[in-house]
Structures are given as C-alpha cells and as structure tokens.
Length: 122
Image (cartoon, rainbow, N blue to C red; front, side, top):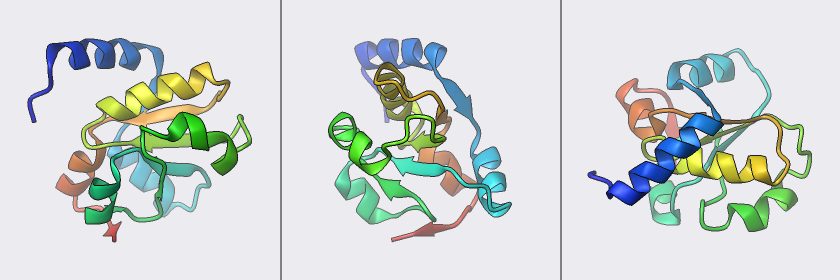
C-alpha cells in the first residue's frame, strides 16, 4: 500500500521517538515464554482476517480510551504491531505520552510476520 506523504512524515517522526523491534525478536521471545503484552492495533476487520498468535486487539482508533483499562500497569512491557509498522509507531508514541514506559513497536508489522510464516490465529 502506498501511504500519503503526510502520514509517512508523522510516522517517520514517531519512529524516531519510540523503540522498535523485529518480528524475529518478538517471535523468539514468545517462543521462549517471555511475558509481555502483544497488542494488534489494526482495524477490527484486519484483526478478524488473522493476527499473531497470542496477541490481543486494541485498535489504534480506541487505544487511548481503552489502554488504561486493558493494561493498567504503566510499567508493563507492551509490543504493538499493525500492518507494516507505521500505525504501531504512532500508537507507541501516544502511549509514551500517556505515561507508559516500556512500549515497543514491531517493525514490519503483520506483513513481515506473515512473510516469516510465524503462527497466526483467527
């Protein structure tokens, strides 16, 4: 998908302000049983088509409203992902502004996850 210049500009700015990780690292950590929140920030319809195994869904459109109820501990480790890593970076930046200290964006998103054939569920 080709993104608009304005979206790319704010996404790239957000990526400079947040930590990022690779799909390989997330998969390795999940496989090793490490405990963290894996959150899919895509739209409901995208989530319904399939998502990373073990993920929970909090869409980017409602994450500011719902995060404190879903994950109240602001020191919890949260790994966010979307389709390609842009919306998750924007969401990570917002969560940091809300006081969450350990938020990471998964670069490449579900697209990169699927390219590696990592497990999904519906």
